[in-house]
Image 1 (cartoon, rainbow, N blue to C red):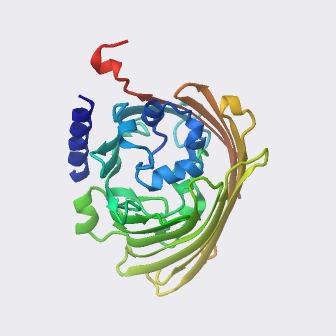
Image 2 (tube, rainbow, N blue to C red):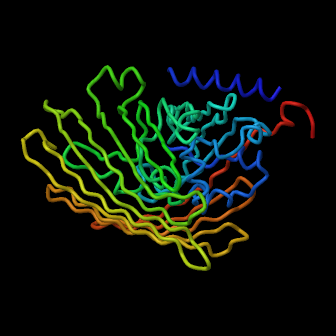
Image 3 (cartoon, rainbow, N blue to C red):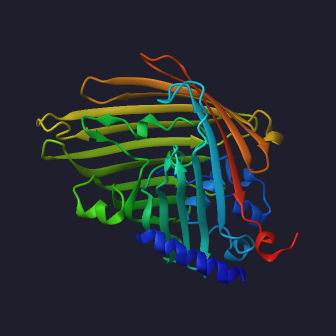
Length: 377
């Protein structure tokens, strides 16, 4: 019965694939393995070394027989507040609900689909939809196809702060870096011993036929890193080579190259993250003017009450777009567990020339228990 449910779920996933925001934690994986969330997470949804390995190998680090112990579907709802949001003050936004389908078919194919039911009080859109074939090069390579994040550090898709990374999204002229964005395309993740090598090509836009039939941002992205599954240290480099159309005609050809280092908290010492990015845009505002940009991010984070899976973190960032605009921003976050599958985050954000912002979110995830379908308690 469970195998039939996995196959049916995959069929639904392929339908969605043909027809956001990044994926988060997988509570059904915790249900299937019987492990605590800390087995893969620093603080949900931020990943530790083991979680990063599970993510980049398309879930194959978990035996498929183990995954079949839980149904491949779960739901999520977030209540959020932002003092700088466009709606009236002191309003809590509840319209953030989505469902996920994730798992595998047989021993060689895995998948993940995330569909927003409601997103920001608006009709939801497709967030993620990929299928991976994993029986390549002695099962050390994974070929992803669909709507998926292109090669970049895992912190761009899986992190515990509410505020996204400015170093991944800053704008140069008309072009936004978008290094954390999902694209329609394909990527190959190769995992030789102690290293990860990722190559991907994709197009922005929604849906898939629009992404390639219309002029859109298209890019080749790559990442090479020292990343052992059990090591708390990850060091690497990543970048992109892309083109994007300009509003007044013409095309901007852009390049980025970045280096990063990530250290998980160990032996009562805090964790740390450093990212430095450089970019070049040959025609960012349809004037023939070039722009050389750069940006950095630095963050420290420390678990203060391990039993309650709490984490306090502080981040500072600066982006310089090469056209005379500089942004310095940052945030301080406190993440905590309220109950099983229920988490909260409180954040203070700051940026130059603005007043401080207060944000919080309560995030509830619910795996579908087997008893719900079998009638067993």
